[in-house]
Length: 71
Image 1 (cartoon, rainbow, N blue to C red):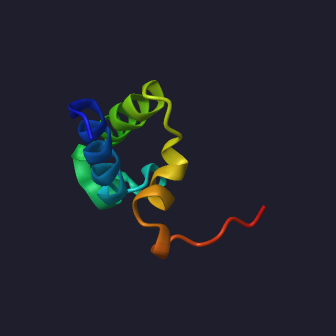
Image 2: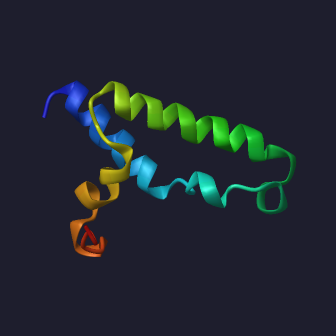
Image 3: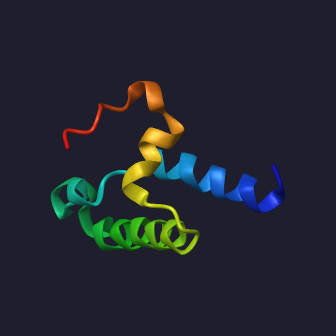
């Protein structure tokens, strides 16, 4: 892989470990919840700018642990 591909792959891996935005609440994250949401959004936007659908990253990185699509 070239350096750009390595960076994109690393970003995908990191994204799979991030909490889902819907799970980030003030109750769970306290006053940091807005910062966490902003960071998640930054990573999502970087993936989209690279032509990658963030919703498909989990299946790309961990295909054996991803449920089949229902549609």
